Length: 632
Image 1: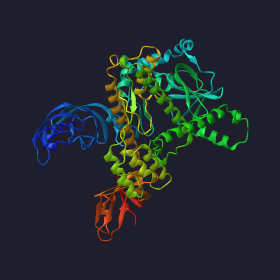
Image 2 (image 1 turned 180 degrees about the horizontal axis):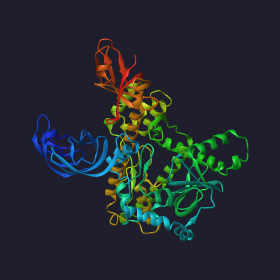
Image 3 (image 1 turned 30 degrees about the horizontal axis):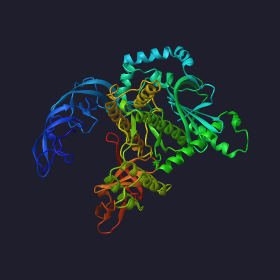
Image 4 (image 1 turned 90 degrees about the horizontal axis):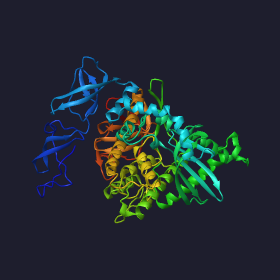
């Protein structure tokens, strides 16, 4: 909700106080809206009422039909929406456009019938639409995409003589098993005593030009959205999974970052070229890891032909280089937050039948380090050029990560000490190395996931900006996003800016005055996409638990409040609440300092990070909530 801050001491707005507005005084304003507010009181805190809605944060809402009423799925929308319901039955989900809302009566029109509540595809589409992303492309966008696909072979043939040809260099992609779009490919070969590393990125901007329906759509979406079992792509399938995708055995246009690397991992030279490549092998992370593991255990000196493959030597070299890159980043103070994602096993109807923790293997790190290198070096290259000619007003798009706020670090320190670790010292600024040291301490410990999550929450959010402040978490002075233009619009902008420099006609602040607005919009779209992904995971976790009421699980206390304990199932990472009233054997007080509930009589303590045995008492799919009870 937009608001006018208020300084009660001066009787005027300040930057530190919110204005309290009762629901009756919202007058139709909804979460995220920008509003004009009239102050109605000052003490003990500012109070006011909405007098005008300047702009709506959103106008389209996913709704469910319940008892003949149209109820928005967003619980912050505090009234039913009046629409004609004769064509819908209870249990249907629909997309509604809000026409008017005065705080009492809401009116709208139905844009789309989504399907039945509880159906897998209906629920996933509902999550995407609720966060403002379209599930389909317009006719104009599809028409442009099909035309590009139809002329693709001729386009490739015409571009070959204009580009550096990497088709004879051993090149591979390494991606998840279910990947459909291949943004990046890797090549490596010996050049004298050094190595030439090629990070080849899909040349999406060659096909997507400013002013086209495709570019307008990519600008609006900002990013692809990844749900439990599907992707809502930023670019249509014809481009994202075909024309732009670096598919095995097919000639593709790329924007290549090429590095000469010393055997100690130092970057000796870098250059950026438009290229044509052909990926000779598409590896999954697991396939590439198996080859590396087998090669480590074989005494065969002819590794380049091991198991009939010609990529063993290249994979081993890439792994060695990645290890050097990572070691240097850690030395510089980079933070590794690890990865604790879950993967769902779904039946044919999309129902979850199992949840497993994703295992992070070294080939994940191998690809990640190569992408980090390319992103850093592109940002460094353009930034150094800009520094040489500051009078030209050259600009760039950075991926920045600010230092965490002091109060967040203080809260983290209290939390970590409550779990049993020393962290943070008074009158001393916490550095990335301090955080990295903490994360090293907890590796393999039962509380590792809990502390990693708390540490991540204490960090500032990484965003896009034209103003560079560096990247705290990665310990990079310059950083950008260059390596995923099929699925992130900022990467496409970076490709265009970099190419303008290589062409000798760099974009200036005057020519690209809207870039900062694009950065803000892209950061907002990224946050929405992350929220949608998390909501899809939460939905499937609760759905998985629906048939397990009464069953018991091993869990950890993931949060402590005065109303109860939040607990997380160790296997599925599903989180729910143990209400304080169900503890039963005592009256429990909340000790904020200890992050614990403490029994008044028995002094029994339930603390953050404690392992517990829990029983599922209730599961509500509509609200995504789980209720547990402790097993004594």
